Image 1: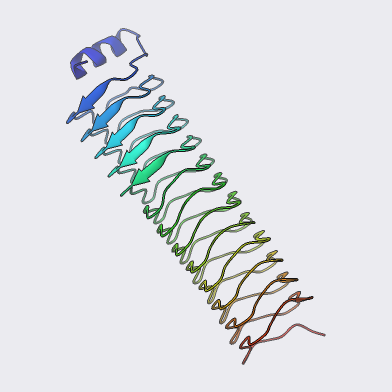
Image 2 (image 1 turned 180 degrees about the vertical axis):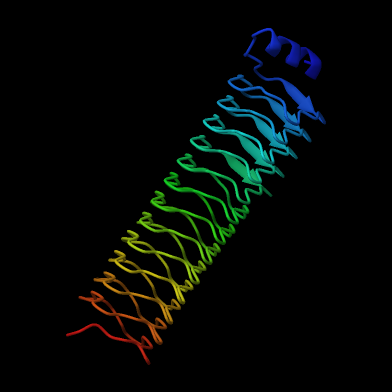
Length: 275
């Protein structure tokens, strides 16, 4: 279907455009809200500043698509394939990307508040400065992704894969990361206040200068992690493996360490919990 025909039909009230192919088309600023463009092929297409609110892009292939500053709130991108796609400053509030897969995707400063990324593959994706407040990322693959400065307040990251992921300066207040695979992840100066991280694997992770005030990090592996100058006020670390952990100058006031393994931990200069 030619793009002019699609726009004409949309103007006339039609909304179903299943399996269309839009290649090399500039649709910047267009309004296609509530359209059904499922199982489509979009290649080198520009939707910069477009209104795509509530659009059904289920199982659509995005290749080289530019969605910068686009409104995709409440959009359906379930099972979509995203390659070299730009979502910079895109509004994805309430959108579902469940089961989608990506390659070379950028979501810098995107708004993903209450978005659903369950079981999606966003390994190596760029989420710098993105807002993922109350987002659902259960079993999501974020391996080696960049979430520097991202907001993940109250996000559900149960069983997330964040091996070697960068979360430097990120805000994860009240987030759930139980069962997460976070080996070698970088949480330097991240805010992990009141997070729930039961049964996670943070071996060799960088938690230096991180804030874990009131966090529940029980039954968790922190073997060889860097927690120097971390704030662990009232943090629960019971039954956790902290063997070989760097706790130099960590603040551990009222930290719960019952049955924790502290073998070979370096606690020089740390403010230890009261006995």
